[in-house]
Amino acid sequence: MTGVPPQPTLTDGELTLRPWRDDDIDAAHELTDDEMMRWFDFPGLPPRSGLVEAVENWRRQYADDRAVVNFVIELAGESGPVGTVEVRRTSSGVGSISWTTYKPYRGRRVAQRAVRMLVVYAFGELGLERLQVEVDPENRASARVAIRSGFRREGLLRGGAVLQGERRDVAVYGLRRDDPRADSLHGWTALMDSVLPKKRVIAHIVVRDTGGRVLLCKVSYKRDLELPGGVVEPDEDPATGALREMQEELGFELPLVGVLAIDWLPRWQGWGDAIEILYDGGVHDPSLLESLTPDGREILGVSWYSATELAGLVSPLNARRLPLVLAAPDVLHNLRDGEPITGQPEGPSA
Image (cartoon, rainbow, N blue to C red; front, top):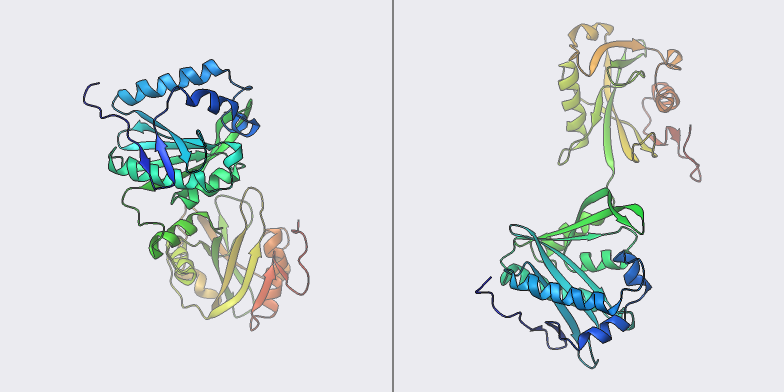
């Protein structure tokens, strides 16, 4: 395609990104090591002719409206290439970035600085609007480069790639042209929020009657009876989430008296760990049932149950903790998997 400008040379005064020269090939081929072969899924040391062919392809792809721009990385004080960095157009306005640093030069922030320079070029000169990095979760060095270059972790493609004959997950990191800079407060916190752990929050309501019984729901999606409430949505406080769930499922609103228990739930049957809050829905006349209208989809019915009736009707978790809560509703119960926290952590209960 005509009208494509020559591939530029970019520099920050110490690090330089420039087009490949023929005399780079021997030096780069000799620096190929096991780490590169692993993460680029080479079956073995590629022949020199393979790198010659790759360089020719990169030049052709650059000429084809800059579909691929692959740079050699140079470092002041070092002779020859110290690595490579590439942006590959994958769809309209979107590019994929990859890189490598040759073994003698790792640990010197070469990749991070090169990627940052390439980001400026890709958003500016190439006019891209989104850049993406795909990394094997075990390639922690490349994950750090992505984060330190301003890319937010966006998700995991389970089994998204094959590496050395094994199907592997792929972590996806993304950066938009309009994202706040990573060195700004908002940009930094958004970046950290993308990689820090997140827990589900569950909010249930313990509603009691004057006889000390607890209100439980028959649900459509499992055999165990369950408390009213459910998972708290993003940007929703737990108390509001509990009341919303009760309104949606039972068509009823009631004031929350306080908190009865805070429980940490370990991983269980495919669920990740979570924090659960049991709110006190107060003590009511048994006739409260007449005011409840189960939605018929998730909630099929409701009834009162005493603590002695719970075994076999509720989950093992609720069978452990509900009798504690019903016996001492004036105490804030601090629980781990339904058991009082009194000493060192134990393994998850069955």
